[in-house]
Image 1 (cartoon, helix red, strand yellow):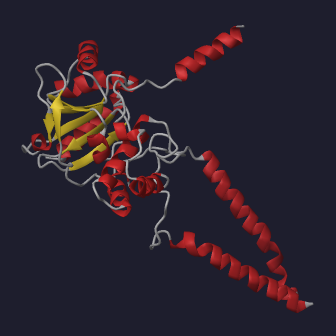
Image 2: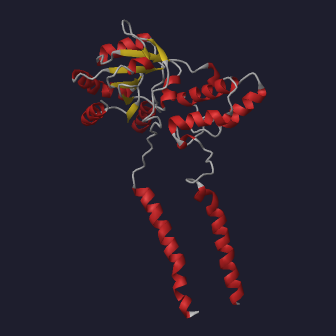
Image 3: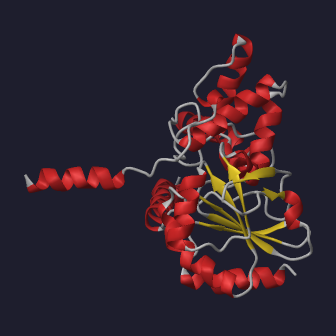
Length: 177
Length: 132
């Protein structure tokens, strides 16, 4: 019996471990970001109709022209998309080609949005029922994918692009060459 | 009064922006074939809504969940199996999207931990009864 005395402490140790696990889960900020599982994979095949006047629609072939591009998933009804517009204009000014997929949107609203917030896009495809958004593994707007010159998704930015995210995105584009 | 006004403002401010276009028809319409609808429904109950995260797409009223229901119904109607559709979703969003964990190397602790704990309990109980 005496040599088994240490066993008495076992339940307390187990309880301490449970407390530690729960405390860790409580204090660690939860990351609920859903990231795409498509990174490192080719863009899904799609053909999207144009939605902005004088701007072509978007197909997968547009991403296989040898130069890395940004694919911005946005919507005129999305508030963080307004917040990231200046950063997209900065990227455009730095010579980055940017294409977009407009989610569940109308030509009138897109035209208003571009007039108000600037137009960094070379092409905009209209994804009325989020089909391409789902095929990309995108879980909301805005999201931005870095696509290399062969049409492979190399990186994803979830949420609006802040000023301090711009260098990271430029680096990802440079790495994709 | 001020509090009521503040509450009303908070409620208005918290309302998410609505999308500009309506959901696909199959988001809120059942398939005409009852057997297909039953299969689609069973699958929807095991797919996570990626916007609301705590709900399945069968339970959620989010726009995105509606479009995911439409995708499930269209693919079922086109003759795909629930398994194929689940794999398609997992290839896009990772395992997180499925509420139905498969039995494999990563999830084996989840499945066998209860058995191991039960065995440990029996072993402990046996030891303490024998001592008397």
